[in-house]
Image (cartoon, rainbow, N blue to C red; front, top):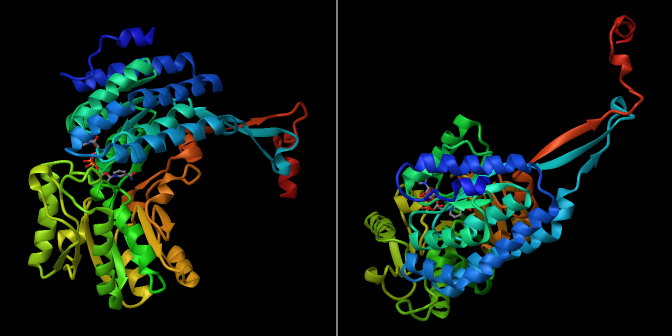
Length: 473
Ligand code: NAD
């Protein structure tokens, strides 16, 4: 009935706040009618999400490529579709165990009562996604939301309009609007969306906008998971084999042309190895991307604005005395192909060294001692990801113990993000809260503690009058 009520509500047009309120009210009403959906209902929603991905995969890939200018279908398959389908499989496999009530033991004061924790849905979850992995970052949180028994409203990025339109149609085909619905629009719609009284918000995007989202959510006391960005360092240890480390670092940096939240932003390299590192990087970029223009494997920069931003980052560093090493090919601004570069000697105060790069530019920071590298990292905002390459176990421990980061991959890049048994989330300026796998299920559930008193109450001694007890205490 609630679905029918919103059937005629357009998801674009005037009065975004009104539209969002109508959809939210319908979802909340539907939630009240089934506060704690059983496993079969949740499993069915996850199964439908999977069928939607299969049926619409090609249309998603075409739309995303259109939004980027060129985004290889294989990149969309590997980074957007495959991880979400894996997350669905994982959730369906573990759903029964995740939903089980958890018995807990009681202290002697509680005996002989019993106690357990019930995991229940929060209600309606709002999910806001960025443009860089538009499908993955929208639907991975949705997997957790549906597994936990919630309903969800989705708000994709205005920089992926083709994808947003296709997603809206796909979701309509597989879900009623009181289960899952898509709201499209720019920052004004996004602001109205995050000001709505959701039961939980998951926001993925920049630190600056994340701050606004946290403020808007605070007015409703809506809990928020903030998946933000920042400058993720990669440390190349003296014990690292460049032949092993460089290809893995180059892959992580150039995947989606650096437009990846967990891309290594900059590399800390022992001072005496910088030359060798640059030579190896040039050779590796050449191997992975023999050409840039007309290379179906190389993603375009999402917009002219971002292309110009990257150009400015390099220009300003060069003006400040940095050396810029072209790692391959040449720029093609008309098609927004940004050729990868390494930058050495950039001044510490230039934008390249302060702001998240989000593109195929690799600044290299020299270090002499490991302590110096760790101090550099700890003097900056806490990163979303940290990478360390090397064989020296003591150095590895020193890095793991001596830094705080959202997540770490040792001797590779990106991969910790692709494991459903590892929680994914930032810390400090890179965000708070986490999702993926059971962490996502728990984040979007209320863990409700329940104590069931036995017929014989062991706490009768707590009843007044307290005269006798006061004497012994
Ligand atoms: P963005 O912050 O500009 O936009 C993200 C979303 O926020 C969009 O849907 C946008 O419509 C919405 N938005 C804009 N103004 C808003 C407002 N006032 N209130 C509420 N929502 C608003 O980010 P982006 O440029 O799309 O994405 C790039 C950023 O996202 C980078 O910083 C990157 O590191 C980060 N990111 C993080 C992760 C992660 O998982 N932690 C993943 C991908 C990207």
